[in-house]
Image 1 (cartoon, helix red, strand yellow):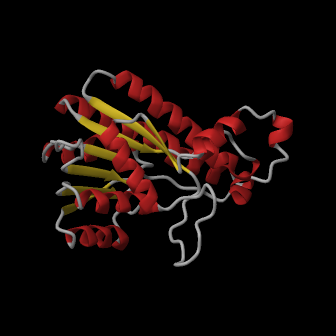
Image 2 (cartoon, rainbow, N blue to C red):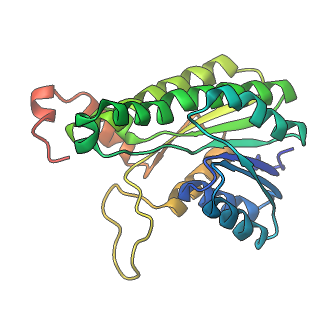
Image 3 (tube, rainbow, N blue to C red):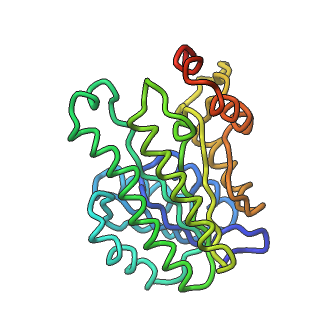
Length: 251
């Protein structure tokens, strides 16, 4: 169960090698989280991630999960929930793709869409139903500001995130009043590391900053979190800009 501050004692990460997810897990382990499931494709990186969390004192376990195999999601995630209640599910998998190449290769473009959207729809519904059955918990969905308005530079990725964002909002409405909390997180461009002494570029963020925002959002039971917060106003303006103007913007 969650502690008095609304923070989880157990966490399931879908996308167990995600830098944002691991930063979030580390932050929550520093509070009260003790059990962490990392779900992802079996690989050395997944095992190394689990070992790094064990070193922090968590009971970290791995489970084989493939976003592109929705037929397996109910079985795989069901096994996790049979081991005990999960307070927080963090849906953190996704791929950016390569816009220039993907435009010329529809199969690659579809893979981006299937991973970021259809895979997330399947896993999100399965996780939401399990949380609803146990009567409590939060589902945090990592979206992106790219989904607010598709840019020429990455409209394949952006369109998949737009679908995911709309799905998560609708799921949150469907679960309102059930005891299950859904929170959408919309980070700007994420920089893995900012060299010491160098300022972070405006409106970009880091995994640790997103993790901090997720923790605060859980405490507040927010429905949507922007990282950095200023992006909310920026994207509101861009969303309403005429297309003739938007096309010319250097973004």
